[in-house]
Image 1 (cartoon, rainbow, N blue to C red):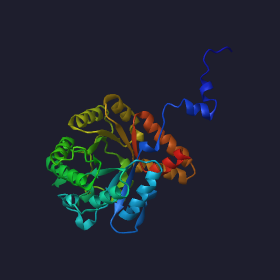
Image 2: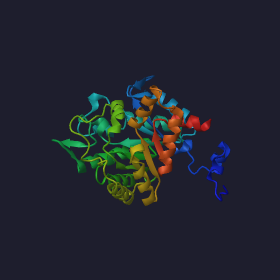
Image 3: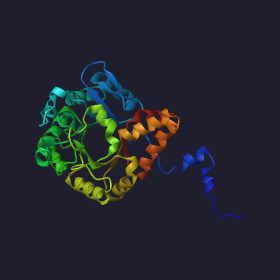
Image 4: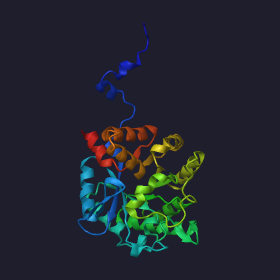
Length: 325
């Protein structure tokens, strides 16, 4: 045989493969989600998310410092609201001394360089477990958006760098951007959950925050998993309304959507490697069916290859450690 092109030449050694790799994953590409609870010295493992924890503010701050040392530059905060503080108005979400607000301040004080992103949605604060205000069986859009805008300002006042609305209400990006501008927070960014699907892969997350819907489901506001064009439409609207970063959620079952979005917009694209995707790898590893380290890196590299410049993942710490050698 006298071949003109031998493609295997560029796969011949680890050094060559690294030299010509098209997709490079870095610790700074990762966003570490953190679950925060009241108290001190508390670290509770989430049963459906092995080796992942709800932590009190003091331990969360220590974890943030560790993540910074690994090269991770952003965290995404979620809080577990006490049942007695939940209602149908989101009042606790606006409390300047609430758990989220205190967590933001503590992290920024301890690690000023860390980019603090905050979840903006009402489900952790709702007696119904829905992302908005409930009227009968309807999740009311416009009244919810008013609260989300106030919630965003409250997070900005506490020191949040980027607001991350995850609710999928219509018009909330514009309302949040306008509220931030009116209150003087023109440097606070918005990472919009633009294409957030009504997915079964969120189950463990809802265990973590006790935020499962008390009735019905979230399909009247989160997207149908059968739809692709709708994701592009939603994302373009969010960019027009002022989103600085857009997100596709979940990630692994929606790589085609990540690519569609990346090919369409000129802002950074993020993806959320969600709790169910994390739990599936953990379960397969427990059964001896997968090598966990290889599964982590292949999964996250695939998400970045699809077009996500930023990846929120519960494997952020482990992935950064692997990248650092």
